[in-house]
Length: 606
Image (cartoon, rainbow, N blue to C red; front, side, top):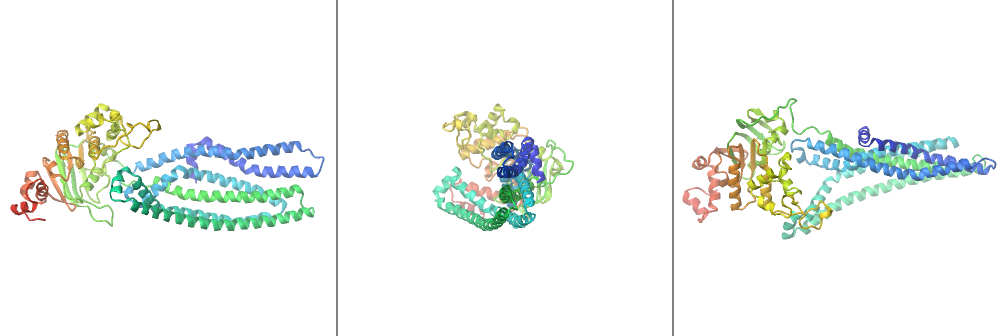
């Protein structure tokens, strides 16, 4: 609560002060109206007392009572926007401080992050407004309880006893609401996934070709049924509880009213006293209802706010020494020493005692079957994860002792699973080096090197054409040139240009850079890349062995271990795993039957 109040003060101090003032006014106005009404009625019953001043005051108080809720709504809306801005900035800054990938692949953390993102918009502001609503309810109830005490000392006690189960029930309801929301997070995520599949342009081809609409539609509806049933059960439980509480309140109010009428009939109370009593009973019940409602909202908002705090307070997912050093320019090379890695303690090993050297200024290729650990090794080099055992050194320095940001600035990477941003063509390349976002000649130069300049220059707006059909501006919604969808091979070249934009990088990592290209385009790209990486330290990863045969050193991974290493002629002469894989791929381009070729060469079929 204190933290939420601090966020409100930092985000909108003026609005918070005004809202506190409105809370005081809103809490005292009903009591003022009740007592002024009592005075008017009593003076009407006893002629000779002046009424004009009291009536004018009563009318003015009525005007304030009518305007206060509107002012509260306006101030709360403004405060909510300001708080949401501050909270989102802090939330996503905290997410940005998570240097690795481990937390993003943790389903529990992902669920809490999703809830924190939802709570960031309204959670903290709801907590503040609910707390102020509680204060308003307490103020109103306290005033009317005092008024009831003046009329009958036993009435406050009766009201207090009646309020205890109400407060208790609302707290339990808020806990149950929060638990229901948390319990439905998985179903909500699955429903969102199926909805995305059914509406995704990327998935539209397979959904229609394989007739998957009914399958995913049924699963989406099933998840919605689960969500609706849980929510319906919660609503039903809340209905029963609130109905019982309402009946209890009605019995207390009815009994008090009978007493007040009887007391007035025998002269123990005046007509004004009866009006105050009726207003006080209604005010106490209304105040309690407001108090209980805001308490429930505050409790639920606090539970959701807890997810935000969990993300904000989450420790780093990659350890960092107190005195990190900048990563120096790579002079000698990178070395993996007995590197073991697995994604979880209960998961199998992906890398097993890998020893590997990437010499500076030379091209090293990494090959192997699917699942051999090639992409995992790239993640370790980028320090998205740390080795479970062993070390990776940069010119002899363990990369865990180096600044993560500084290390990554020295890397140029083309990922196998690259991003397609809903940005312009220029920005899709420029994000590879933020300082070059506005350097159009530099962007066009790497686009030429990647073989996509002609494609991008020919777009309706050239490099400024949006590479998406998701319109971002209503002004050009109907303009067919607003957005263009590239083919897979064209996107591959754009991603390649993005990865090589860092001309001064110390290590260039190319993870399947030509996977989506045809043979001619692949040859062109690799010819340009060969020129680009000449004299650079580079790591090439590819399933197509003909594209890495010119590397200075080729390392073969098998089941997470280095099976063999050497240049192409050496590995072919050895006749090991590499020679077998190369022969299998080469046989696909041969006119002879692969089985016959294997038999002729004396190589057994595996």
